[in-house]
Structures are given as C-alpha cells and as structure tokens.
Length: 212
Image (cartoon, rainbow, N blue to C red; front, side, top):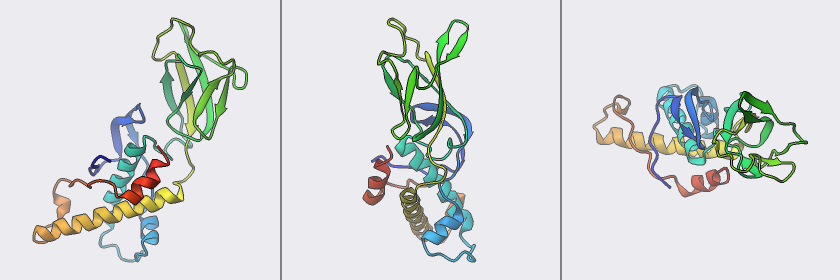
C-alpha cells in the first residue's frame, strides 16, 4: 500500500475513482464525537479536539482516495459520470446505486434512456447493464462522453467497519504526531507541514480492500 499524507482541506480539486472533482466539499467519514466514543475518550476533554478534527479530515480523505469511492458524499447528492458506452455494461464509482438516469449523446444534446427497457441497474455492484445485451454505443462511435449517468449511490452513513478502521488510523496519526512533538522538544507540530502517515496497517487495509 502506498504512503498517505495528511490533507488538511476538505475542498478538493482531484481525482476519486477516475472522476474529476472540482471544488467539491468532501464529508468526513466520522465526527469527533464518534471517534471519542469508539476510542473510549472523554467527551469533556477538549484539549486535543482541534488536532483530532484535522486528523479525522486527513484520514477521511486518505481512505476515500485509497478505495476510490467517497462512500457517503453522493447518497443524497447527484453525481454525474460519463462513459464511452463501447460495452454492454459499465460500473459507476459510488455503490450501491440508489437511483440513476442514463442518457446517450446526440448532435442536439443528451436523450434519456428508459430504465428496465433500455438498461438495468444492478444496485449492489454499481453496474448498469444494457437491456438488449448490445453495446450502449453504436459501432464506430468512440466518444468518451457518449453515455451520461446522473445518479446517487453509497451509504446514508459510514459503515461500521469503516468507522472502526478510520478511528484506528486517526489514533495512529495522533500517536505519530505526539512522537514527533516529543522529538522536537515539545514544539507544537500543528505549526509544521503534515508528516507522512506511513503505510496502512494491515488490519485497516484488509477492511478497506472490501470496498475497492
């Protein structure tokens, strides 16, 4: 697994699962309260709340990049993806799919296809399949945006196993920052660039790999 770095902003201009995200505000996978409850920490102790909150954002973004999915960002928000349509099925980035409108490109714009007549949705796997078994695009068409999919998918809330993995990853980052701070003679590491988080611990990678 590659090394991951702390991302201290929730506003991304980047690539998740092959889709370009322009200034999209990502939602953290867990709250400060959830982290403290999972790790048995006192809710009344707020001394490290700022540091922990930044690590939660860092870890949330790293997990989303690792698995290529946002998990919760598009459950109630539309996401648009484009496909070549040169096969009889394709995958979307966020699954399970909760709803989807598929359209094909014409010289005058996109025209919606009809669900269960032109295409089927395999919600759990994130697949959209041609009802006829033929490719979505006619032979010879090589337009990378021939098919447009406007859909919603993912989870209403972060799955429990992902929450546990994220909490462990935050704990790892917190301990690492404390170690760096100690080595720097007690200076506040919040004033320095984020250090590499290192390779994913095996037990965390095993959980995340189920969502890739």
